[in-house]
Figure (cartoon, rainbow, N blue to C red):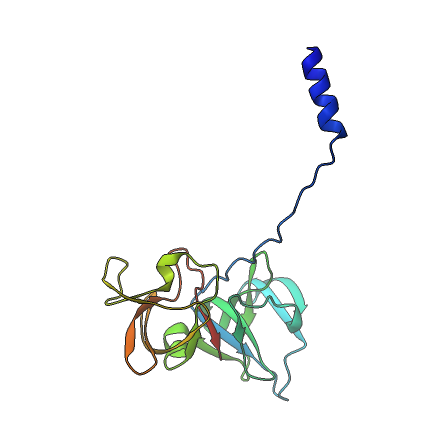
Length: 196
């Protein structure tokens, strides 16, 4: 009993040094594609009205600048803002509107441009960010995790997308290296960075 008392006293007297690691940002959901937002006058729309269902249950109004950035980094063209779309219905888009991945429906406008991943990635330069599992840096002979490994792609080095097939992209790096990489994981989260 006395030993326990001295141990507690000793622990209380010792300065505790806790090093809080900065939390790593979660990779964004991929959804079905991206919506590029731009108002008619070339600037980003100032206010976005979100609904629980298309046209029903107004739930939020926010500034386009409040939309969460896509991670890994997606750089939209000047004057536009990119947002993840998880569903589309008759001119309405369900978007991810905050870092907590809450979603709401946004009505389309003529200046908004929606692109499905298959068409958006075709011919683009993509890069694999640091911090992924080793298997995602492996270039494979077929779009399958069990397929033969051709090479390892360096972190943050770029490749050109030749073809999109489901969760896989066929990429070319340099003049002679080509193969398949995952562009989103089994949980639907992005594994690539793209300049739009």
